[in-house]
Length: 82
Image (cartoon, one colour):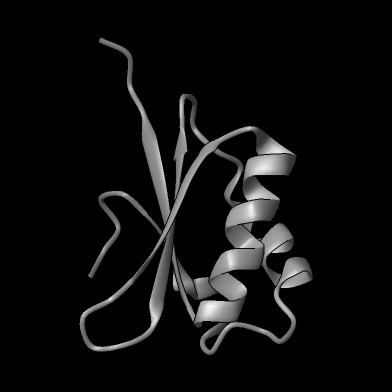
């Protein structure tokens, strides 16, 4: 079985749709966007190989209409959630 990687981005509904579309187009990655129970949205990006975290952060900041609430630190790779 091959190793896979997951990036999660916490954002709002409008940005979630734009980010999901953009990552699917730019990276050809499997992407899902969904609403959280308490409000807010999460975008998950699944990678077959270790992603370039800097590139992901740059793409997120450039694609969102406004910066994410906590900036690039909103991106958490699987295993880094805290």
